[in-house]
Length: 529
Image (cartoon, rainbow, N blue to C red; front, side, top):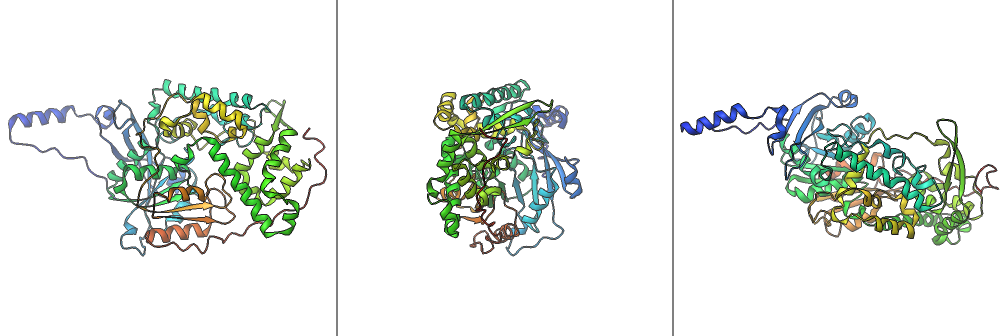
């Protein structure tokens, strides 16, 4: 692996030209003052950003690039980059072993650089290939990091289930108000820190990655995305198609689908819930007896909880008590987050709810795991918002749009952040075509989990309309980010020969859990009302 040297100036014999070049050499900015040097980017060896990278013997660098690539604003971003070289390279493809795999982290904003187990799984996935990973601009190990710690306590994705947006009240408008002000304050905070917030988006990240590819002297890469990182992969292909040999789209959350009105995502998730019940009744007569109208069961459970919410009390740090309220919208939001772990009990849970038996709901709503001071240590939470809201471009909703959506369907409160982007302070600086479906013949493999309401195969079915060489596979019984032996085998086989049809015969290696079909007796004596 070598770094591309800076271009060398040619010295001409003409005295005036020589004089000019000498003046340039004298006054050319040093690396410490590179913020005035226009389009210059560089990659320098550095200490590893985390202990996990050091323990795994990564080659570590710091990338320096423009915050605003199109109109440099005087600010230089710094990104930690890690390169893992295999001891020996080997693959069946003619040149696949020489093409590095560049990992695009998801979240958006989740930093995997300090998570050794996560990194080891990535290394297992790519086999005997070079792996390049990094924190994208705005992440916790990058400079600047877009930090908005107050957001951790109100975000449904970081304070799972017990966020005020889901459980603080039975009034959806009160729940909405509990989070919007913090979003607006985050934007203002980042602006006050001198950050050009609009530049933190997949368009700018794609430029960063391509500069890093060039500085590491690679003609092409294999791009590997995780969740929202797969959406960034599609942006990278859109803007730098000649830089990509093949793409792995892990449990993908594509930008042009993710940023639709949140009602659309809710409908997609509800279909996954009903598909799970249909699977149960197809496999078990007892399940069919328990839920004879399984197509209607989700909505009936939701109505039952709207009529009679589950209410419980938790303890705060100071010893005071706080009530949490879970209505039908909270039920759908929680199921969206927890289906992968709770699918086996879902039929009996719904049956219990319809009959007013709420004893299972304490476990379902994770009451014993309530955290009065939630944190999100792997996230710079301002980036989480910036990435999604800025990628919307001109598709960002107004407050009127989002308020109307919540009034029509309160469950969209748990499907943030798209609706929250109404309170984000400005549009992202992205091209007009940024949210267009990707049209590409690059070979790609998408991996989905059967129990992933977020990012199921419907997303790949949509993408395949304009990506004819996209293959996708669904892993039985798995949720978001499935970790199985099959995943690694399939990724390596695909990278060996991206044009070949992937052998997906191992996709059902994880069996479905036995369905829990006994009914609860009575209800909790201390909870619900």
